[in-house]
Figure (cartoon, rainbow, N blue to C red):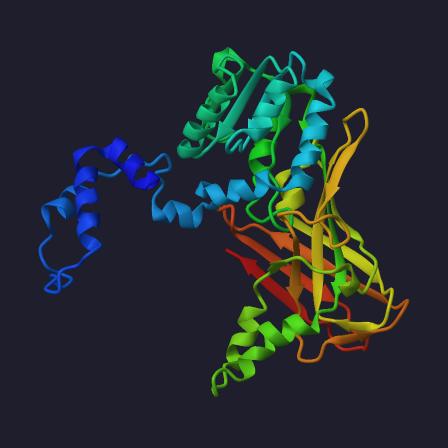
Length: 387
């Protein structure tokens, strides 16, 4: 076959031996050796030759740092909503990039860096912590005709890098696709803000420059039955002790607009030009939802909006249920209540959302939500943890 021929071309004699072994497999001997017997010479030779992998992070790296997975980058690159917004913001505003020095924080495989270079940036510094991604990103840049004089990958972070390349002390633009689920989960916002504070010149630009987080009341009895009530009887056994812990995990999913019960207040509005890390990762925000129909409240749903207000014509994209689908989807915080709250049309529901980040690990995030009760009862506080 063609695949066997390619193996033979790349691996020589051992692959040819493999070909002979495959021929013998087509008509196995009735007295074939059982599994566990000594390897044949062809098998031994085949086991000796392995190609050098381009992505060499350990299994622990993959587990604790999902950005080492090619699939993660594929999801973002295929996200037409997110990518279209970045393409418009950069290429349709090439006058902001022409002749500029640009720092791409958390560059990954360098898509934003490529766009900046294409827009005419004098120098693009692609800052990425994962050396495997740096190596692959460099190959992508060279494949597309950008040498290190224009697009240079640097392995490091805004917190650990001693200095910028080429003796540069300031940059004109800091950009990055830093957002994560719920805007903040696995977010690299802290790195972007460090880079801004260290190297962005006075009057420099942030791409994007605005981020907003929204919430709404959600009705989803089917999800509750399928994933939480399910524990009442599992193959004849009572697993109900699992329900409360299961509901402390935020749920990333795409929900339908028809499941929304209320208006969608903004609980966080970040101006990337001047906000601090604590504005995002040590925040508490009250909110009020006006119910637009009658229903039962099963969860608080959240999503975000990213804006490029500095552009000649502002560019933005949203990730809510009423927006075109993105890889970010929405995040639901299901309420651990035995009886969901019943709300009526035009009823006001007040609450508060708090977020804290207790660890430098990008995945660690604690969320606390409280909704006022319709009665005079003490409101129940709901805790969630992402690790």
